[in-house]
Length: 339
Image 1 (cartoon, helix red, strand yellow):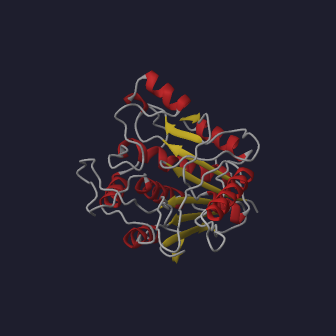
Image 2 (image 1 turned 90 degrees about the vertical axis):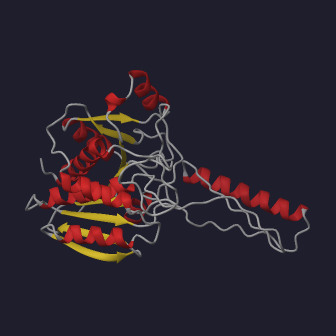
Image 3 (image 1 turned 135 degrees about the vertical axis):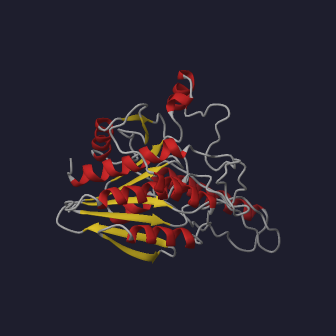
């Protein structure tokens, strides 16, 4: 039995696929203009998205979000729902017969950001905002779950994971007393380079402590550590083909990015293949050809376009939700061998 972890992302970028130069970089997937073959996101999912955006919840406090997710899943035929997974997480299982196992994941938590978008469905929680697209992720996965539930007799099993607490913030701080603490955010592209940098930190901390006449050796503690997010082969190539066959414009990102993303923990712990992709937040015709070229080749956003984690980050749900839902459905059906 094979197990494939799959996730869509408006948020953070993806490290390369291995310590060696990756055959494929992370994916940016968005619906090509004028494509009508796949169903559009209906008004229900538009309403769910707006509700989630209006009532964001921080990491480990996604109680109302989890309740909404569980209620929506239970209203669909065939889904077995488990709540309280990893705290506030929700897991749904569809099928269970012989065949592949496909995991679809969406992260649920918001950021401690005061929203400044001016949207009529802007956050009603002061100082908290879905500034990284997790409201789109949750809505997209729910929409995909509904579509998959309508396909009775799927070969294999679909596992929908609604994950809490993806956003882990880290900063630098110093408290000068008898002890000193230095907090660092470390991001590397390979496990080898990570160990090299950690060894350098230990060596530098020891040298500083010795030069300051410290009475004890420094302690270097690694926490909130995520494994690499890996786009495995041939799974990535297979998924690229499926997206292209269903009318998606797929653009390989030219370089790996050091974004914070814990999706890699799923494939690492399960020992299964995984593919992580991004969904465009706006219609391509909003931008000039030069803007699109710079975004795809240099990964530079056009002037006036707010990036994720910005208080003005506001993807267009009329454009983003339909490809986000359809991409998850296409991926799951393809891995299950449903054509």
